[in-house]
Amino acid sequence: MSDFDPGRRRFLGHLGLAGLGALGAGSLLSACASSASGPTAGNGSGAVTIQSNLSSPQAKAAMEKLIESFNAQGKGTASLNTVASETFRTQLPTYLTSANPPDLYTWYAGSVANDYASRNLLLDVSDVWKSLGDYPQSLRTLSTDGSGKQVFVPMNNYWWGFFYRKSNFAKWGVQEPKTWTDFLALCETLKSKGVPPIGIGLGDTPWVASAWFDYLNIRINGAPFHRELLAGKQRFDDPRVKAVFTRWREALPYFDPKGKAYPFQEATTALLAGKTGMFLIGTFFADAAPKDALGDLDFFRFPIIDPAVPLAEEAPTDGFFASAKTANPTGTKALLTYLSSVEAQEAYVKASSGIVLPANPKARASDSPLVVKGKAMLDEAKELTQFFNRDSSDALQPTADTALTKFIDKPDQIDAILREWQAAAEKVFKG
Image (tube, rainbow, N blue to C red; front, side, top):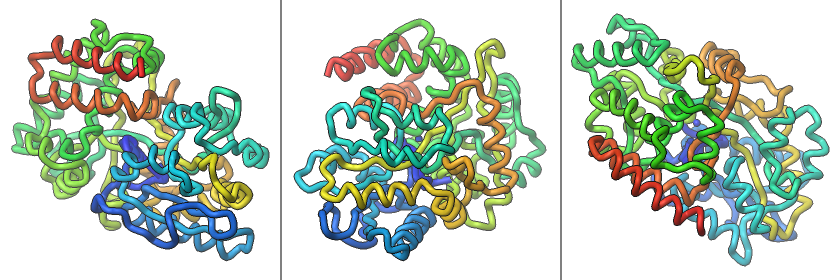
C-alpha cells in the first residue's frame, strides 16, 4: 500500500507510501477522485465502504480483486472508492469528521493514526487483533494507540532505497556504492558521462525531499534522535541538524536540475528511460513501471556515513483504519479480518507489482531477487523508521516541504532556513 502521501509513499501503490513515504504514494494518476463502485459514505444496512488512495493502475486493480473476493465469501459486502493520493491525504480529516463518513480507509500506521485515535475518530479494532496471534509484537505495538487500543490493521510494508536499472549501471561501468565517499565518487563518474546522477521529483510532490532528510539524519544522528526531533523534543536549529544539511550539500551538485519542476512520477519515468542514474524512492514506484522493466531494476541502501551509528532503514507500514462513526462496525471488522489474512495479502502481492512485503508473517512475499534483497536489508537494520510525516504528523510535513525545497534552491542559507523551520514547527507542536 503506500507511502506518503507522504506517505504519500511504495514502486507506486502499496496499500501504503501513500507515500508522502512515503506521503502514501499511489498518486500516479490525476488529482480527481475515481469511484470504482459504491458511495463514499457508510451505512448500516448496505455495503461497507472503503476509501482508498491506491490509485496507480496495478494497486487499484489489486484492491478491486480483494473486494470482489470478500464479497464472494458471503460474510458481508463492501464497495471500493479510489481517490488520487494527494486528494485523499488532504481530504482525510474531512472524511473522518463528516456526519456520515466512509467506513474504512487505506492509510498508514504511526503518529497520524494515533492523532486521529486521540480525537476519538477511529474504531477500536482490538477484537480483530485477537485473531492475529501470528503477527509480530512490533506490528501490534505500531497499531496501538496511546490508550492501549488497537486502531490499525497492517497490510504490508516496503522499503526505500536508491533504485537504478542494472543494464544502465553496466553500460556506464559503475557499481553500487557502500559508503558516502563511494556514493559521491559514483555521482562524479555519472556526471562526467553526461548523466544527471540523482533523480528527484519535487513538483507537486515536495515530500520526496523528506526521504533525504530522514536518511541523512538517521545515518548521522541515529534513529532515536530523529524520532525525538520529529516529536518536538529536539530543535531543528540544533547543530546536529545543521550537520545533516552540510552533508547533504555535498550531493546537491549531482541532482537532476529538471527534477524541481516535475513530480516523482515523472522522475520515475526519467530513471527508467536512463535519463537519470538513480533515484531515492520507495518501492511503490514499481506499480508504474512496465512489467518488462521490473527484472532490470535493482537498488542499494542509503550509504553508510558513520559506521558507529546503529543501522536504521525507512520501512513504512501500510494498512487500514476505520471510522469510529461507522454504522456497520460488524461488517467493517469482518472486512478487516479478511484483509489481514494470508489469502488476501498473498492475492494483493500477486495482483500488484509484487514489490511489497506482506504484514501477515505466514503470507508469502514474492521470491524475486529484488524483494529478497529488500527484506534482507530490513532484517539487518537495528532500527526501522516510517517516514517524516508518519513519524511526526501530516501537520508538520508542510514545514519540511518548505524548508527542504528552499535548501535545495538556496543551500548557502542553511542557518536562516533552520531558524525558520524551528519557528514553523513550534507553531505546529503548540497547536
